[in-house]
Image (cartoon, rainbow, N blue to C red; front, side, top):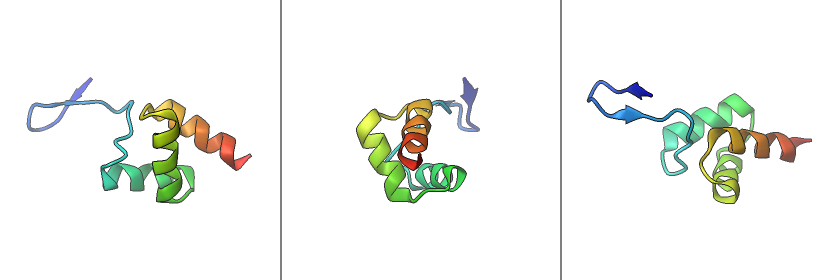
Length: 60
């Protein structure tokens, strides 16, 4: 696990639905709206893999 400059652990396998910059990044990466990312986090949890799979499933 990576460490931030403040010495905190950073978990890149999670999407923090309440952190606007993380939601914005994931939305841009997946080509969806921020609301779609927030809904996916609510529906499947904050695992990045599950969120991305849910977003892919909704698009197809």
